[in-house]
Length: 388
Image (cartoon, rainbow, N blue to C red; front, side, top):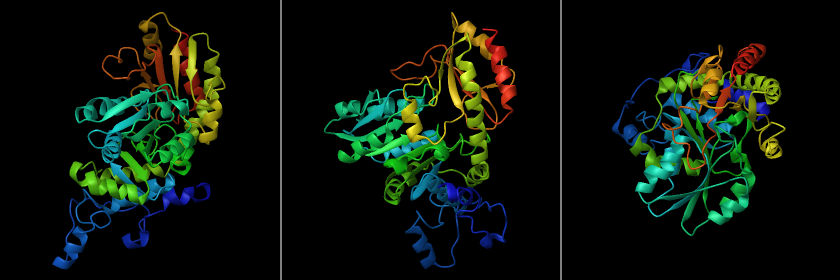
């Protein structure tokens, strides 16, 4: 992808000659499209997947983004949703029915867990949550009615990983749909579809948009799988993104490489220093030399995202809160992938957010480093840690 990355981010799918050679793509901010004849209208209605008829199905601006996201993940096609949760829900429900069984890794994103352990359970779909660090655990969880395996590598709090190639091979041997949430790494640093995974989902809110002004999601996969999702559930559930939000993500993609690498570079500088701080119990970061899965991480990701977690060495939640309250340049907020640095403390939030059946440590603070000056961010972290 490296030789084509600039083309994907800045040109692919944009067909500038159709829009007066405008440098920025046009926004087709319309709900529907008109036709000159009944025959034209009929043909469009018969191909809502690939023809502008009604924006819930196909929109030219959204289609530019679909092409770019598919290409970034090394896939044939993509769908873009109104949120990351919509992407996960659509991708999961599109291939399941009552009586089916799913294998999912422990500690997925909280709303993924609620989907699998709550909503789908009500409709007769069962899920087994496993430690995904060993492929044998996937084999042990396999049932006659297993239809899907869902992984999140790395996850977004403590960054456990799975052997993506081994999981993909396991799924293919057993005729299962394999699905991964790739939001942490972004397609810039990890391309699971090229390792054999069927469907790759993203919270496009994060790195793909990168400006903290859009909530969106993406599903990337083969044309067969994407068309199946579209035909079975997409038009009924209606999770499509607005043309204006799609345009904002296209704008955000222009700087994806710059932003993600800047964030990663800062984390590479900061993490080793934090690991030796007396008020830090542990740093969770896939490329950390203290991570037992470091070798696996480096075999699957070309670079590590600029998000890590700190386990604060404190006697109680008040010590963690002191650290957070004394940060000057990190905003206390959820999410990641934007230009601003963020801190997300687990303490005080765990009772209102489901962290599944494998609890996240109470003293954990997830840190995301944005594109600010690395020395400024490091000094901010150090002075706040000194106040624990």
